[in-house]
Length: 130
Image (cartoon, rainbow, N blue to C red):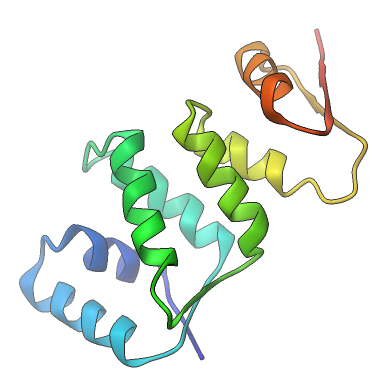
């Protein structure tokens, strides 16, 4: 199994650099690939800015990537939940943090907008601090 960095995923998904994109594609298609949650998080930031991907485009790219049979994503069930929440309008980082909360009973934040969105979808109680 081979773990990949954000820049490999970006080249694979964006295909904006012919030589590196080809290398990334070959690497991903010819190996069993491990993708850490932190790499997905950073990839979302890069796709959003400077590449100006919309949340729908980012989610579609991530779903396509995670659907490849040779790709394994860290904590796949929680990441899939984060994808769902992201597609419904939650910030990806917030969604990933919330979905990855493990066995916690509560999730605390100062971010009222996030708390409002999270309270509608999460099974964990979201505390809004002042």
